[in-house]
Image 1 (cartoon, helix red, strand yellow):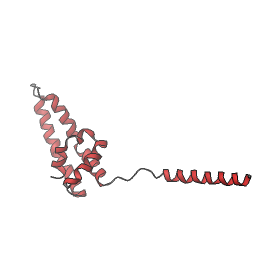
Image 2 (image 1 turned 90 degrees about the horizontal axis):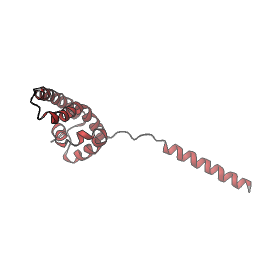
Image 3 (image 1 turned 30 degrees about the horizontal axis):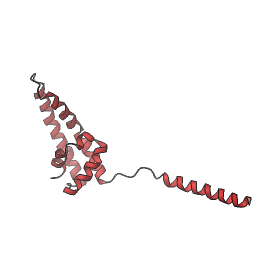
Length: 125
């Protein structure tokens, strides 16, 4: 009777160890869409921040708006150049791929994920 309990205990320990090893696979590697989203978020983070600030400056008559819009133009050009690097590395996105990249962006840069037209302009259509 004691040997049966010992074997059950031993089987239980082996099961726990196996489950523990299987659970420690680590994070999943990033897929193509995640990599594109990460790169695009990095390329356009400054532009998104300036866009948010520009909304507040829309009614500004002090002349600050002109400076911000000049900065936005420069940052837009930087973002386009950076996005060209992503295009060179991963290729132009097809229509059906935008949904996957947008999903990946929601977790990485939610503010940019809302600007779908910018994504489509710089990475695809």
